[in-house]
Length: 280
Image (cartoon, rainbow, N blue to C red; front, side, top):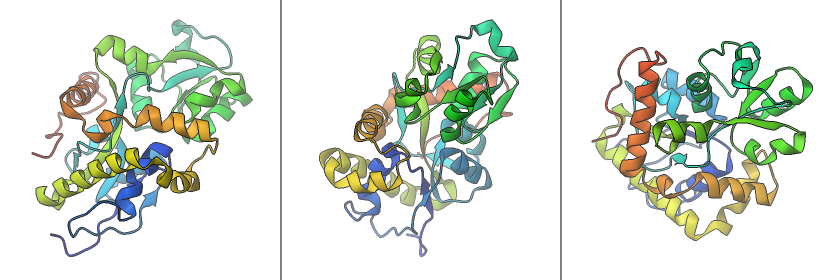
């Protein structure tokens, strides 16, 4: 085992704090692995840090994963992946597909899966404006941008701002690929070695199961970090993004991730083929 504390980062979103509560609070065994205090950052910051190789264990978008597989390997636990949970392209007014190429569209960071999906869905769109995910809906409402791709809790609250769903990008992906939508997962540095990586993977799996059996004990931790404090929004968020794939990506999830990365490679989003995705 390593003789140092590992660095770890995940988002403050309810699904991640729900998943990692037991992991970071001594509720599941870590087999002599020790961690520094977690870094809570929005997913695009974590994506950028993954490109730099900053953290040992990190949440990241599957889009970003396609750029860092030389340094990181994907864990089979802790992922956000499923059906009916993809990002939404929203606007103040109805927009048809042919109009999108002239629209200014906000995306929640260059390396998010949401940004990759809008490029796959509408490759003619080149006026993409990266910004923090929580700034997108106000920017649409103010007219700073014409449309935007929203993620996380925003899918539950966009109608309150008078916004319309132009395209459910997750539903589009499911239709054209037949796969669930892979949003993000937990990656570990390959240099940690298989034994450490497998132990972390097992601990995260146990942490998800612990949280599902003790949801009330996670509540305060989730509220401390959540952008949206409404209990029903937080609960809907967790129910949508934490599922069986979060426990184990399994064969269907692996196929979905490989399909997404293969498609990205085919259209030139990734400049070369990737290394093995999962630890052996």
